[in-house]
Length: 128
Ligand SMILES: [Zn+2]
Image (cartoon, rainbow, N blue to C red):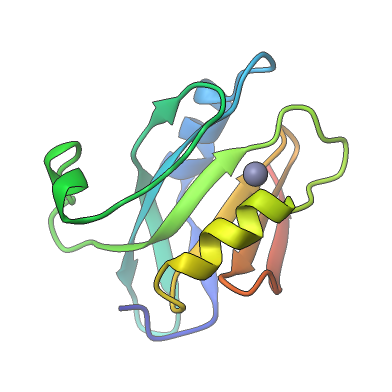
């Protein structure tokens, strides 16, 4: 589990978000991170696409992706290509509530990346 409330997004993640962002449909997946000295670094992402997009992860899902060495699952990410300003939807909030409260959730609209807590609280906003 992550130790700090401070998250740093790796260059790799920024690159992946830009490459996989599609205007036509939502993309998303699981977020992997690593604890550094005073922050948690979001290192990489797994992918899933489709509409409606439902991101789940339970024990069976681990067969869909491999957790990178030294990483742990820190939460989920997905895109909101149809939003000018990133806002978590009621579907998002309901889904997040069902998961581990310690998870964080990233939403990207092609310009801004917002990180939320499972309760929908905003942790950070970054232009990417
Ligand atoms: Zn959403």
